[in-house]
Length: 398
Ligand code: SAH
Image 1 (tube, rainbow, N blue to C red):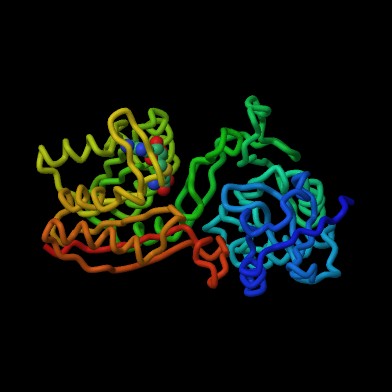
Image 2: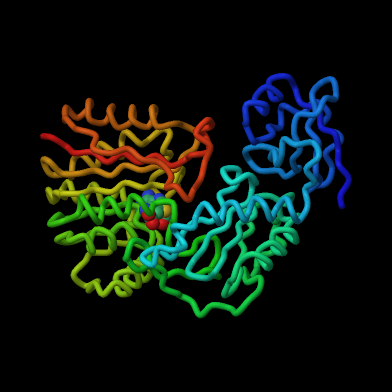
């Protein structure tokens, strides 16, 4: 066992932690010189060395570690990790029983009690993501727990912290019987091909499950659909299976084309009846405006920040412009799905971006739905900053 270090926090941080805030911010630490080895278990104390909580030291962009328990006597050992992971699995029992959905998140970091760690389930395969050197150094506990309490085909892992180039040739396989990728997982009856051993991404963003379902069930039927920043075309698949007349998927990554063809194909959709364009979304908007193309559904799901040869896009600055582009190519009574995963602003501000775009184009709209992360991406309601996803589905009225 690593020895426990006493870390003193300022009064503001102590008050926040007492309210349940799980993150330890760098600036809150009064004696940073004691923090040496990532993965150390730390006792968080106030100015007078009184116990507040216990956590671990692990550097992420957001902070320098996470609270693990507020009980002074609870040891951070195998039993600790077992209790948190077992509770998380239990909360997802209904998903495990749902034959129509075989891919979802089983452990969501601080929302399930351990910041910096997520575990996703893909039809018998588990993918563990480590967000700091600190939590990674505690991996033996987590892998021991998985060994004991779940049945898996194989375990894969993603290191989502700066490994300083050490693992460039990394293989994400950890243990079990290696998968023959792509494997096909299901989500509300739709098929998705995933590869768990192909870099940071697997082929599907699990946090958009509810949005894919909404598009499939309510917004696609009979419509022509423009899916921007389409990646592997998952929203296009949902729209097409939901009865869309046609989909156009636009992404500038060249591999998005073969990946999108694959996603259509595993759903029995003839990809030749769909349009897949490898190009800059902003160029596509120009092209669509020039040709007066109109869509019944436009999907916007840009990365928080993107730089292409011609344009730099930041959701925090340029979202209103993006919505204006979408408005220009949306039919009267058409739908726009506006999504962002930028954690630096909340829903309220996001809606002001949308509102500004409509005001500046003298267009009216009606919000039909607002949503955030699905239930398996558990997050504490008191701290909305950890619930990064914001989705607004609206109708353009004129
Ligand atoms: N909507 C997708 C996920 C989008 S990920 C889904 O639900 O699966 C973001 C994607 O934006 C990446 O595939 C990236 O290649 C693409 N991208 C970034 N900047 C772009 C640009 N200027 N034009 C087109 N695609 C862009």
